[in-house]
Picture (cartoon, rainbow, N blue to C red):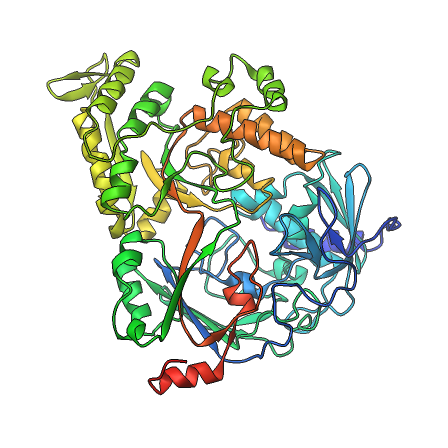
Length: 607
């Protein structure tokens, strides 16, 4: 690691005297693929109540633990919620797929060839200590995250050739390539930290010292590993901006950590936390009973989810030679009986995932279009032939638990790959046993993963399920010390450079990368580049469909399950806007505390 302090200070001094570019077409908003919904000078987003009262407290929960307030690096386990303390140049609208509106920046000017982008900062923008936010702060943050941030940040900001600060209010960004219209999103949504702080502190170290920011909240209290409380800043510089009107209404937001889902749920039932998104179908079907529910103190419901579900899957670690053969990966996938799990464990609540963009128009659920085939033909011979046929769909069972035909097919695939059963053990030509470990840090997952492991054992694998504590799990995940790991990654409506960290080659071996399978496929890399460089939304969708087919038909992952709705429950102490955001729940930033409802519950009455 290296220190940036002297370099950042000198760079800021030099950049501030450079000649600034003229703004040709400054606008208050940006969308890479078309017009934005809200006109210049709009009053507020449609999904907020601009008259929402301020005050009260929101208590949330999280699983696991934390030992750092620094979310930008690999080292340490970062606490949740730190995004409340920082602002970015622009903010996404939660009822549009890819529109961004000025926050720190009052305008954005994108070159016609997308080679540069220029932001003009608001003169009133301030950090929490009262110091102005300047272009030098943006340049210093970019340089620090680009070279010292975790692999995700290095990847997101890697297409930027330089960030210049010709004057304190102007940020000029130069991209390494022209024509990639989604690239401005990365710098526009980057949190901005003070250059002076970055010059005197080493950002690649974890710690419990809050990072300085310009956001609506500050850290009020921290109990290492157990909880954090954020308090609303009465002096927040942007509280009256149109993008913030009706938002950030709670005086305090606390997040308490629990080591176990069941204990976390009991805390919610007892009123220790206010809101819960339920991810366990067993609890949703059977657990929401008791006095709080009978008296109407707790509400629950299902909210349509318009976001891409992303991917939830078993990730096979291709960095290990035993998983290199696609036939082996496909055989392992056949041992997962989703239909039985859905029937016996999930109360029929889920559908089988079959796409890395599930629940969105980016999912390739039909036959390839002519435009897709034109792209895929470029890679014939480098990709599975099945890509050119029908949509990918994992083999299904009847849900009875009898999967003898599936296991026979898996055994045939393993034999073709050089793995045969000898004395009940799956071995290769050298007599080496095929060992496979499914790693988890959540006790609730044992009932789901154990049947999968037992099916692998029936195939002759020396298979085991191993559960470790959250800290050990995080360390092993960051260092790719696993055979099979389960993970869910949610995506925005228009994913761009983050796809490189999920599926791309460049960071596959970088500790902390989100490419959990370690995919190093040049075709995947080229298709991601096509998405990032798409000139229209139809071109973007075509590239996404092609990428989806290539990843899924290569069996790099074993897809699990998803729902097209989100199941939520909350203590009925809160007010909500009449219109909910399409791409977010909006609990933290659009709900508010209702004193009358809170008093009714405290008095033992239904609101």
